[in-house]
Structure formats: structure tokens, C-alpha cells
Amino acid sequence: MKCAVLIDGGHLRHLVKKGGFEPTPDFIEEFAQEALLDTETALRVFYYDCRPYNGRQNRPISGEEIEYSLHSGWMDELGRRDLFAIRLGHLKFRGWVFRDDGDGEGDLTDDHFVPSFEQKGVDLQMALDIANLIAKNAVERIILVTGDTDLVPALDYIRQSAVSLVVANPPGWQLHDLLLSHADETRDVGWPSGGEGHVRRRSRTYSD
Image (tube, rainbow, N blue to C red):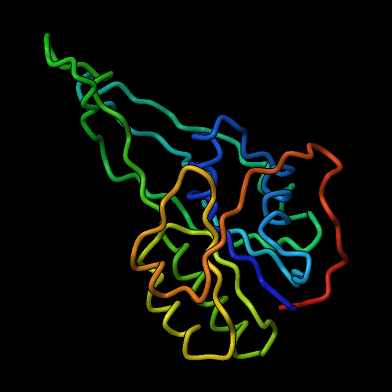
């Protein structure tokens, strides 16, 4: 069965780290393969994420300027893997959020706050790819890895087509009722255990 795997990268990376692993390109690629049954063939794996925020902001108490300058070369590496297509949104700085760690004594310092960032454009990219796959009759099944209920309108669109929808459930996560109610099937997908060289590589067979 021809399938497309759609992965919300921010969601997956959070769960991978929560599970005590590092979301390296190898790990993400292996996870995508773990999401497939032996009877399924991935025509493409769509990976949606944002590059790290780069810019200058002033700390909330001292006013000291801080520069964010993180690299994301691993995303470029992932995009060079067989079958992978990277779709990028962008991170927007939304301000500083009080970190409630139970220590309410003493004067407030910069350490009491953490930066708040918001992903922009990722949901739209996913919805457009879903519509494109269905319009082209490119796949028979979509395997979705996300925790975002904002995608429900796109999931409604899938359910109106002949394409079946599988919502994958990685370890450490419980799917929202809205996602459960819109899925034809849910699938528990464990973390990869084979290490490097475990990935079943295939040639590209589908083009935008």
C-alpha cells in the first residue's frame, strides 16, 4: 500500500527527548520506518519543523541583551535522506514567560523567566501537502505524527476522500480525543532500537 508519512518535527523531538533519546537524523529516519507496516511503502516522508530562532532580545529584568545563534545543519542532513522532504515554518519570539519552579522567595531575576516561541506556518504546510497528495491520488494512506488539533479541518478533508488516515502515537503521549475521532486507525509506534544501519532505505518514487 502506498503511504505518505507526515511528521510534526517539534512534537516528535519533544517526545524523543522526553524519552531520553536524541532526535538525530538517523533516529528520525528510523522512527519514520518504524511507523510503517511491512505491507506499506512510503512514497515520501514529509518532515515539518522550524529552524532555531536567531536574533537578539533584551532580558526581562536586567535589560541585558542576549543573542540567540543556533545552527540547524542536521535539518539539511535529514533533507538529503532518501524519501525525506523538509517543510520549514519559522519561530517567532513571543516574549518572556515566568518560570514557576516553586521558588517564590527573593527578588525576581532574569533566571525566573524563559523565552516563549511560537511556530508559524507549519500547520499550513501540512494542510497543503495533504490536499496535494489527495488531489494527485498519490497515496492510499496517510500516516500522521502530530499532537496538534489545529489540523482537524485537514483531517476532515482526508476523511472525505478515499485515502485512509492513520494517526501514530509515539511513546509518552496520549492522543487528544479530537485526533482519535478523526482517525481511521491509531497506531502505537515505538522508538527505534536498531541503531545506525538499521534503516530500510528505498529509492525515491514520488515527486512534487
